[in-house]
Figure (spheres, rainbow, N blue to C red):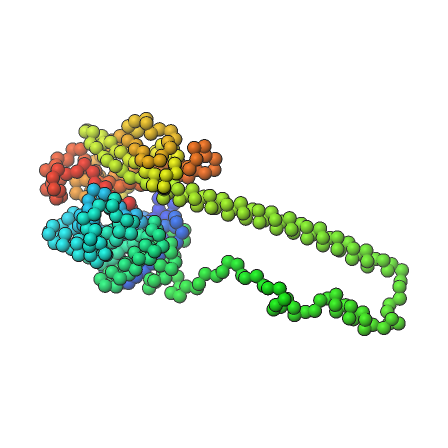
Length: 476
């Protein structure tokens, strides 16, 4: 059904950085394939190329033998809408829409069925994932597991032949993670769609019919039967057992042999007979010194290991605070006229009350033109968010950007595809030393150009009223 042939994604000029290099895999109809690998190994980039979201630098993505990246934009959009479902790493539900509205959106935008049929299918899918009673709930009132179930229903609304799930449970607890993967497996078996799952959890990956591993951009097929992980430490040997008592003590054996030698047979005392005792004394002293050196070396090694473990723990805690205790999103985009817009972002401390200190984010705006992102001018709209701020609740930031561009890519008719990249320094202390983490966020929106009249937009898009200035997109 789907085949990736020598996919490579390179960023920057020659020689550039290869996020994915020469990756090949195939997915048969109804097959479950999993991909494991460390963070930054290229898994998400590979999934974006398979899902028709990122164009490969080299290679092909064949759907029923046709390279999707040779299709015109309109047909490629149809492939994204009708053939492939995508479950992103984060829920990415539209906060101002109910669960059933979120599930129905892909059908309404793609016009694959009328509104009545779209909502009937949306309610049916929500019932399939156990959310029949939560269809009218907004994402803000839903648990993480409920949001993820709604996302799965949304991905299946157009009955895709292939479902791509990019670490769909990375931010869930173990029990909820297992429930979501069980649900995916049941749906995949019942509806016979192909499933590609990216995960860090090897136990979840083992459920697949084939497992691939991503290492530094290279994809490798793993054996079907993977060995269990080895224990890092062998159990200590109890004294007095096993090989510890195979041989008698050397001193006992020498004593017995000494007793067995008659006195007349002993060697006579000769000149230099004190040499051997002196040599023995020297060897004993050297052994004592060597033993001391080994003890000191062992102590230093243990101390260094302790320091490394403590630093690893601190870094893991810092990473958790920066990525899990601070939520960031785009709150609003307003049209200032003449191609100028104001974007408002926010950071919310969701970590349980402990303050988080943040250096004012550096925000850059990009518009997709063809297959590249073209940066546009962006400046802070006020100075209130400058410097280091103590965030205990919610902090907003405002920026003004200029989006007067021609020839922009229209993933949604008459709308620009815009990416906001935010870089910030985060620390749990007001006077940080080595506890600083650099976090980078990407926010994606569809933006209505200032010079496109509403009636032109409404000819190709269906909105209940006036076309919105902006529409949030899932992370990708």
